[in-house]
Length: 522
Image (tube, rainbow, N blue to C red):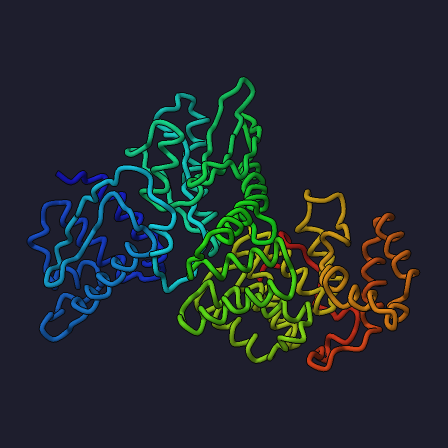
């Protein structure tokens, strides 16, 4: 006999999935027929009832004249097939809508004995959407906690973590079902992989102490069992909700951020070391390798080829178009002669990324930089504000904006933004490590010119290095950037690249400076 709670849990997962995201009518249709079936009215489900009760049709709806229900039923069947093929390959239970019927069928899935191999599932999976790793979030069962404050804290974690992490297109989320909780850590790792195909287990546990609580957070790779990241935080019994926001921000920056997250780095390295890399993983794997490990021209071209291949094959691949737009910024920064950037292509990609990724901070951020490059400073400022409000936890987006503004020669705005983004990470923005002009200094035109005898003097020779070092030690980051900017400006701009007129000044204005967390409310 089917457990009704299991069906409701599976329905909730479906309605929150990527497949059903933004498809309100399909969600209403599915929820209506499932609830009717659970209430014992499955045989009485009719086109008229679906139309009026779930699709919002008027009482005079006529099924023979209007095919809306039949069309929506076909759409729901397709979305269910897509969900079970791509997002939840090994569920405990499947909800199906048989052809010729509007009554759903609930099919238990036979558990497989033994561990699944990574290759047997992930490599055979085919997806029209590029994706990143799935994170299985495991919190304690609130019902098992006697302390009222601790129980409420666990409830808060259980509800807020999926919502916050779910805003990142690079992550997929699975949430613990306390009716199926495994007993040991090994069982939980196997369960996370076998039942949810989650490559990482995020385990959050509250420990009650005399003066408050200790929150232990651990991220484990479900296949290898390796602990990738762990952190321990103290929380006062009478804590301010902003304390949790700070903890979330630290966890996201350290573990999940695009530019330095250890989980994404581990995931990228793991798949690069496998014999076969799934096609729908490739865009993100190559991007992370480029931005975190090897910002070389060779890595750039591997990333470029992955983006080109996916966007040509799948015109609605949201993540591929988004990261292709980011790649165009890298091309601008690093001035790769082998990839001259057509300005119109960058614009088209940013607009497509916005369309395919509604409510995504990175999509708004990269569009803001493209607007600045074109000279639309007002729209740039608006989009930067939208990016911040959309996801204030996405510090990688803030870092990218700082890098991009510096590459486009808005040094003052870039430093203001970067200083806020890096708060708590460094004592001050160290130019050799974090100042956005590292693309000019470490891998870009400045260091290239310094390696050549005929242009070494042009960028200031040893005096330039000495000045940069002195200002860095004195924490004079503005002076350091000013000196570096002047040196870069003295170089001849390559023939394949030219700055728009508004970018020819060292510090093109962009309104009042603002930080990542305090940009203007529109």
